[in-house]
Length: 222
Ligand code: FES
Image (cartoon, rainbow, N blue to C red; front, side):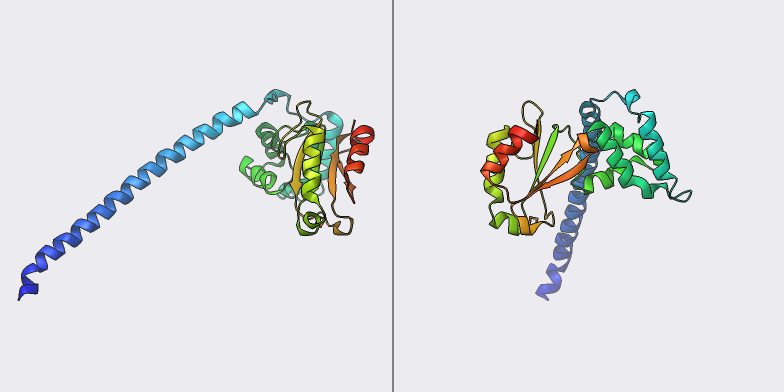
């Protein structure tokens, strides 16, 4: 009897809790929506700020354009997106990094949405999404290289080049990054360096030591 007497009160409490939970959910949804709109605006402003390349000047020179068109022509009509990686490499070699305007240009060229280019460019570490120095030093920091002294090599490079890990040297000569296994574990510790002057190819340097770094900085990377 006692339990029946209190039942309406218990039901009321349950209902109250239910409405409170619904109200909290609505509130959280509203906060999330506002944050999303704010983020979109922020991203748009950031894009404009980051893009120090004049958009109207984002266009391959004729010889590079011909090469890009030849690459695209290897794929059937409607499948131009398949050419995205080689075209992004061409773009990076041309402008040294992939600004949002450059990625938009590539998207227009391939007749795809810009977001499809952003997805690919942000997935691969070989694409630079910020301005980089003349030499992009990418030190392997996977297990075998770490065991053989990759950390010491990174520290030495920071001191010798003035570039902090993930950043550029003040004179924009070097950018220092880390990458996963370069498939040269037998020569650990090792790194790869992108050389613009040689068509953007990556050159490998193995068995790195302090002395090897001094020699490279003085004689090869200048
Ligand atoms: S772990 Fe460095 S090359 Fe494989």
